[in-house]
Image (cartoon, rainbow, N blue to C red):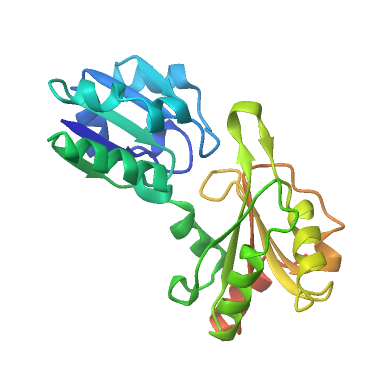
Length: 244
């Protein structure tokens, strides 16, 4: 049996009661630690569930069969920051387990795709999500996604790159430079939303023109940027509460 469990965006207390009960009866508990930043002490989490946690890097999850093989005759949990399928690597684990005849169950939680609702923007009006990588020279996909969403009058969420193992996170100012340099439609007067550590107790949301946002500092991660499309009056009223 393999449980794929979302643990939310905040600390260890974000885990659901359902997940907590499952974890207390697992033989192996893996925690994926390469797609997002953890906002809790692993030892505290171990104390909460009464189990030792195995930190799983990308190589262990994607290139080795340890997790799936253990699930053939034991009860295994794979913990994911945010929600379970927020990264495609977890879909691959699901499929490999199914191919070997392992029973897989999913326990969901909040993710960045729902936490953006904290800005006041309607989730129904978000288009395709774009990711801006550290190495973005000649990378045009995020711009293409934005332009496609813009034509459809939909908001665009940009996820900024991160490497939790090295504690390296892209700052919104780096992402803004990339966007302005490559996309003439994005100007210094364009109004955007900048978010830090959404879904946590320390989350930050700032709204305003790029010119104004470049004058502030946000040093909490991970960060994301939203370029809104045409706003409903309620969306605008909410955003104005975060205006710089």
